[in-house]
Image (cartoon, rainbow, N blue to C red; front, side, top):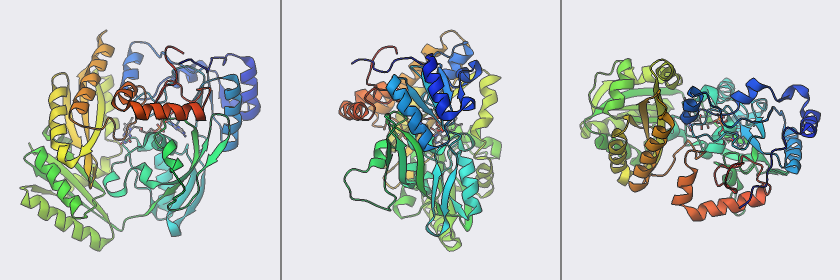
Length: 479
Ligand SMILES: Cc1cc2nc3c(=O)[nH]c(=O)nc-3n(C[C@H](O)[C@H](O)[C@H](O)COP(=O)(O)OP(=O)(O)OC[C@H]3O[C@@H](n4cnc5c(N)ncnc54)[C@H](O)[C@@H]3O)c2cc1C
């Protein structure tokens, strides 16, 4: 394997050519910009910052506004063999947007135009640099909702969601982002533009949407997308229920979905999470707590909630009423940002391990991962999303930091987490992607798939300029 992309970004010619395309104000080599675009929100990078390091800084940052501009700038970078890293809002938790080989960071946030909203068919066409919350506000004005509410809702982009296969809090009801995508426009490394057709379903060979979904900026730059939206719900019903054990709560959710009930949100906290994060909302339970939110037409919501409560009661669930779930819902978008002071003032590091599995294995995976992680760190466990065939599990891991060994300790905990997940049959990632954090595991778990991916990268980006070193690295060693 050889490195093909080279770093010629100090080249004045590149700077001049990019300025010709974008104008002087949308190309920066400023020191502050280079520092800010040197990382995303991967907690390991936060540890590096604490130690005074931002090891991978880009040489330039650009802010294109149109597909045409992205195409022209990629053509230039491809000819000069300069790495290009697509960057949404940098809220990724795995180092996916880190410019490992320097080069140009392409910030998409000025590509935030909504091109079309079609309320009659609940469809929207828009550029992918739009922030999730802005998109949702605009949809709401037309009586629609995306139904996609990740914890980073106010600080992440549509392009980031598509490139990482994101899941929002209401994925149980509305699906993950891949369930909402209809078609997309992608600029390839040589500047050519690929569009998938806007049609509800196709039988025209493999679905090219899926080639770019989850591609983490390494196969093309997604510049626009047609997305499926939904009518704003007429009614919403909330409930908090407690269960003695996690496996009983998991089974309750499985039974609800099996009957065809579709709560928008079914979020089951283990005892540790309930007594920490839900305690602030007035939950005194020492047990696991299930938050349920049903939404949609009034009659359906009432019926579904009634049936869900029957199932919960039959399994010994205790009903806490509406208030707690309603309060949690009100705070859902700011919940994770409330953790920031813990990181800065209390010198704690919080991170999330997200995995998924089928129902038959869910309780086993939960127990195995909690047991393994608890040896090294404090753990809060949640089942945040459920599907008819299984669920995701997320573990907030909390450790004290502030010593010279922090990075080594961080890596050791993640090795433990991913070993435990692999041994207990969990998928490597449910929604956060692969990034820098998990790519060697991906290669070990599925070498054939990774070799296929590498082949696609060689074909689509033969000079390896797109986010080099990520997903299925074509090259090895330092850039
Ligand atoms: C507090 C907090 C809560 C979070 N909660 C959730 C959650 O509930 N669910 C969830 O799924 N994630 C969550 N995340 C993770 C993160 O927000 C998601 O991964 C999100 O999809 C990243 O979007 P972004 O725009 O910030 O992308 P970035 O971090 O900028 O980029 C992520 C990856 O996508 C690539 N990329 C970005 N835009 C494009 C594009 N237009 N074309 C091609 N490639 C592109 C980048 O190169 C990179 O590899 C959370 C993060 C934080 C900090």
